[in-house]
Length: 246
Ligand SMILES: NC(=O)c1ccc[n+]([C@@H]2O[C@H](COP(=O)([O-])OP(=O)(O)OC[C@H]3O[C@@H](n4cnc5c(N)ncnc54)[C@H](O)[C@@H]3O)[C@@H](O)[C@H]2O)c1
Image 1 (cartoon, helix red, strand yellow):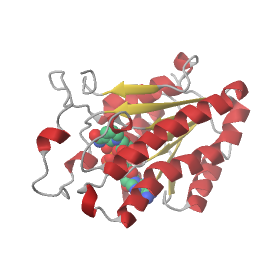
Image 2 (cartoon, rainbow, N blue to C red; image 1 turned 90 degrees about the vertical axis):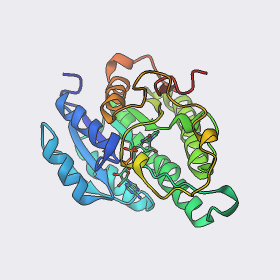
Image 3 (cartoon, protein in one colour; image 1 turned 135 degrees about the vertical axis):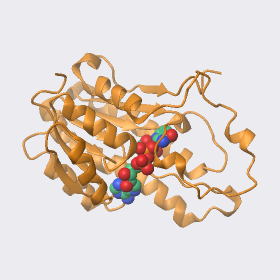
Image 4 (cartoon, rainbow, N blue to C red; image 1 turned 60 degrees about the vertical axis):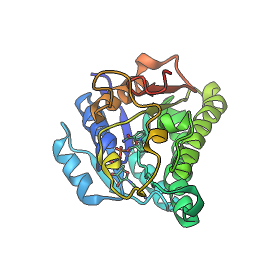
């Protein structure tokens, strides 16, 4: 098993990609702490896992809550941090609320930094690693989701900067850039009418059945967090059915 005896913290684990990743890590022998603001969803995820996780609801907007989550997860040491919590808000840029901009940045970017900051001293101890969730939206502009795109470009920057800063202390930091994944996030309906969908879809997946399932992304989390990826740091991994291939 890939994670026998390893302690992993997985955020966003009440749903979608985070849930699939928590299930996958437990199946590979990890002792997993799962965090999310959706406590009921965490309970559902726990019931699907091969071993009982530590359940720690938290609010990514609140830095103290992020630090508390890491403290709980690292009680017996911490080997892996998977930052997966996130929010997507659609809107025309000319009337997108700055409160929503701040919320997206707080959940998708500021909390990622806060969680990394709290986890890094523990990861230095274990020569552990971080896998962040960026997006295809970290690598290109997407109309009507400017805040989300900015937040994910920032995750790419955090990932590469921390990778350089901590490489000599044995800590790896990578990020995954999923394209379209079938989760509640992509089924939301709060999308303005009359937007130019051709612009949004100009880089649709190219593969037959090119949109991903959460388990496809969980597989890449497991690989990058494992010793199989021991020479990989500071990298952004696309998994997008060829969305950005051309
Ligand atoms: N679904 C996609 O197509 C796609 C593509 C690229 C990247 N991503 C990224 O993957 C990650 C997981 O998304 P998903 O598709 O599984 O969506 P999802 O909506 O199923 O899961 C997101 C999780 O984040 C949690 N969350 C939201 N706000 C939070 C907060 N303030 N504090 C704590 N937890 C909070 C939610 O409760 C939810 O469980 C996100 O970072 C997302 O941006 C998704």
